Length: 215
Image 1: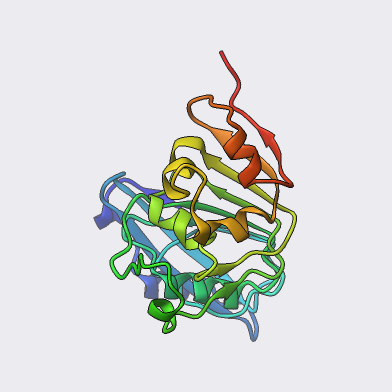
Image 2: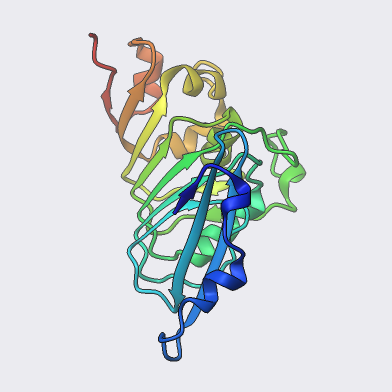
C-alpha cells in the first residue's frame, strides 16, 4: 500500500480492525513514511506467517519468527545499526537472499578493525544466506557485511555490489578485515565503472567475476 501524503495513511488500529476473521492468528500492521521519497508503506500480515518474501523492512520492524521467509529486502531513510541486522537474522533463520537499500551512515559505527575494540558487538552469522545485494548502500553497510569482526558469511555467496564502493571499502583490495568474507564469494556481479585488475581477482580467488556491460 502506498500513499504520497503521510496524512492519508490509516492509523494502525483502523487497519487491524478491518481483519476480523483470521481465527487465532494475530494481525500485525505498521506504517512507514519516508519523507525523502514522499512515500508511505503499510505492512499488514497475519502471524504466524507462511510467506516466503518480506519486503521493505525498516527500523520499525516488529520482530517475530518468520521461518518460511527466503528473501528479504531492507530499506530506510534512517541508519541500520549492527543490532538491527542481528534482529533480522534472528527473525529470518531460513533467509537465503538479502537486498539492502540505505544511504545513511551508521551512527554507532565502530570502524576500528581489531577484535578487541569490537568485542561488545556479536559477530552475526548468516547460516542460510546465498545471495547478497548491496549496490545502493552507504559504504558502512558494505563494511557491515564484509568485515569478519561483524559478519560471518557462509561459503558460495553471490555478491552484487558497486565496483567503486567495493574498491574503497577494501582499500583497493588490500584490507585484511574484509579478506576472509571476500574469499567466500563464488560469484561477484559488479556495477559501475568497468575496471579489471589482477588485485581484484586475487582478492576474490574463488569468484566468477562479472563486469558491467559496455553500452
